[in-house]
Length: 260
Image (cartoon, rainbow, N blue to C red; front, side, top):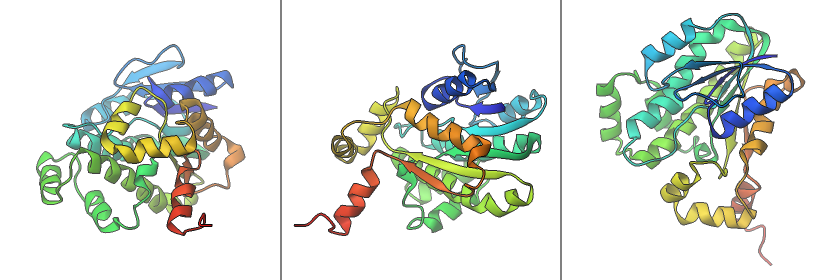
């Protein structure tokens, strides 16, 4: 297999690259930072910059069996604009830039988040974001101001948009014999876990405590790489939670299933 992988330099992306290489795949890594020695080629890209995305895509040669969109930013104060650009608009732009180079029967996997699980409740705001020219600082800034979007809400919203976009692409990709799914992890023990705990506060620490531990990058990467493999070819248009049971415990609480 030949795989295009954004966010290859660290965290879940680096874990994906290692699993893929261990299984004989050729991995072309795209990241603003140079990945460790787990990719066959590194192509620098700033996922918040449409020119950088276009330049990176122009350097790509040959076909791919899968695209793994793993690059993303955490909910960090002061990064509101960049979070929306990298996590959603950059993901879409990069996918569209190399879509024609994905082999028939190929897969696209987008990294979303459990933080995007409220997309149905927020669908009007999600659609409003998706309708923007995300590279226009005037449009995006106006949206952020009018909607009172801070860095934490920007993260949630960006991941809601990834899930909605994944769903929206299902039928037209099936017509091209391609498939797309998203993966929604909860707390994962990577270098940016502290950013999530700071942003989400007690809700994050309590969820981790109930699950017993945060997930690992390797556990999430195992699911992502399975979705890239032909063995998963009947999974199309899904958002798949991988959260150690956190969502189910919250749901059980809300339905009062654990009352004695």
